[in-house]
Image (cartoon, rainbow, N blue to C red):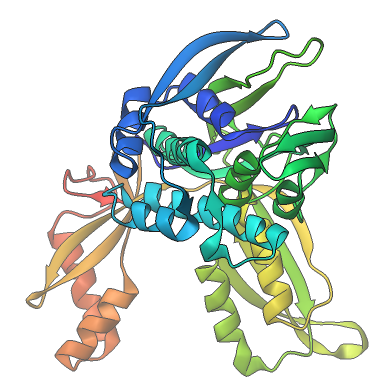
Length: 406
């Protein structure tokens, strides 16, 4: 399964953990695989059931979490984190689940004025939360989702009765979780649960309308209530950001900067790349009044734009960042290891329709080889290029089977 799928969550009618899980299963995630993941955390404690449903005339899938045990311990965030750490879940499923629960615990801790470690997930509610959160993260892995975004969230209005008594809607934990996100009322009642909003805030990289995607699957998850005139559903749209002939959507961030100590630029560029930029570079310019300066340019996936904007403001002296959408056309890339002077160097290979178009040894590998051999980098690079050619890595040759994705 590809790891480059993007998932966009439509929470315009509200969101809850079981609704998100229903949408992902409806989009193609295997419920049996999801059940196995939940069982790794709380073995034999819950059973996931799916059933078709209709909400305000719209077809959807409803997921029900059935407790299989009567005596459910009260669990704190510390307890749940221990269950996740010792579960044997795939690394990304575990990390995503942990991130969601950490968000949820922080919000509840703030609302109740206690330490996050001591936040309690109440009895059966703890099982529901574990099943929903781990289930959603396992379903994302099943579907090969690498990045997520979501739209504006409908949170509801009025009042609701909870374990802590009657509370205003949106409940305090939801408002805490929604800080920095676009929300609206959307109607009466509790439309967004803390678990549902925590999933979005922990996993979605940006709040946006439906992005440019080649749609591959759509799933619709049902809430428990069927409200006349308003479909109580969450939709998930899955797709690839690379559309045939259109290229991959990208964002270009730019800022003109004339007052930053030039010794700081290498660290700024390295930090932007570590933060998820596809590329970052400087161009010398002359600004008004003849002042020398640089244009900082950062190319990134739309889902990373907000985080990279924040990074630019944090690490530079600029007061403004320009932003533009564009299309990035990139050749498919792969790596092939070749033997050089008794060592191994990775060679990056650009290819198109199974044929090699570009060949270049990875310079970090070349530099490391030069240091080990005590030779100039230029000499090591020449040897690596010759070794690549000897291995058949030349333009026009077929991509070798041992090539690994780049």
